[in-house]
Image (cartoon, rainbow, N blue to C red; front, top):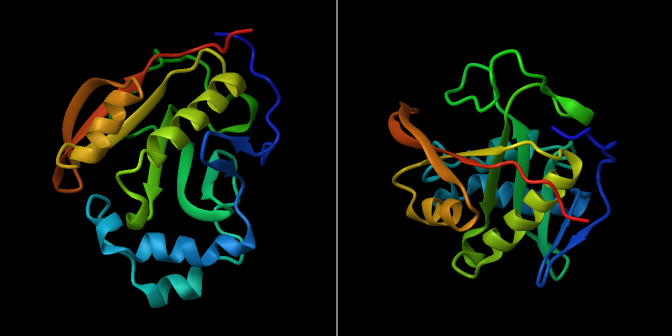
Length: 192
């Protein structure tokens, strides 16, 4: 594995064809609440959170942490991408036992891609565009590290996105009362 590069967070905004990936801002708070309160978004993640609870608990600048990107369209948040480290007890480690983890700022564990988008933008390719850009950032910041993705097998959209992004199945298991799919995207090292 290549040596990690120092990670500055939030990074400079990442521009794609249609989106900007950036750190969160105070103006994103309402969109965060809408995202987590949405019954459609909550379908495969344990259900929506009560809006009143979110109003009282979401900080002024939500999601302000390493590996958390806001996906913005024309300046407005439409979703979020996360690159977190998996808990050690979760299924599917990629790293051989005893291998180093947690380079350049993220805590130990496997890198895990997550994404959620507001329902009114579903079906337009924004998730694929944003995830590809976040994975490109990750490859530059953590060269040679694979990335994992876990989703419910019943979530057809997420399963198609995983395949489009180059994730391949490692295993399936039961968790949270549903069959889960665990995929891995091989490590990449950015060119040039």
